[in-house]
Image (cartoon, rainbow, N blue to C red; front, side, top):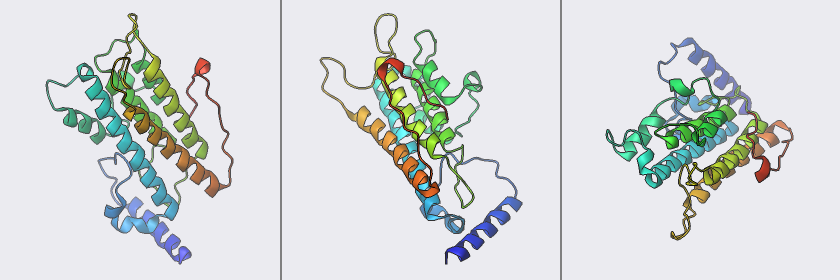
Length: 238
């Protein structure tokens, strides 16, 4: 049965390659319920990968909404559209959408830029999310479709989870010259305690770690683990 599915899957990939290349790019893995005949070309692991990618991107989108609500003055297009429309617009665009001022930068470089007090930008939240999204997509080798012959690297997935931790630490620590946080997230002194940002970021970290473990087990390869220290918070390569 598995051999039959593999043969059919390979045939589907060949036929798909012969068709005209689509003019639009998927934003993330499609919902499996609407995958149709393409599921023939997917293994169980491929479907698990797609579910993880969907989950982490959905949580990233939720994080952007929460950051805009916490930092309403950061949204550059607040006079043109609603908050929901602003966020939807970002996630309707491909991960490599041509923001010309960040085009040559890696995801982690964009994240650092968003939390650089000397960087003058009118929307640090957009910069932060674009950087996170680009970094996460790099961990998936920029794939939004996964089939029998699509391979992933467990170390990249693991490193992306650690990079989310570094980004979260920078978010909570980086301040301007007057000592004010560049982007507000968790509650501050004298505010009601709000741990929702931590929980959401924790879900993203767990998603990437879980997928890294699955791929590691499947491929029979060992992940090189890293202990992050506050004094040397550095992004890991992907």
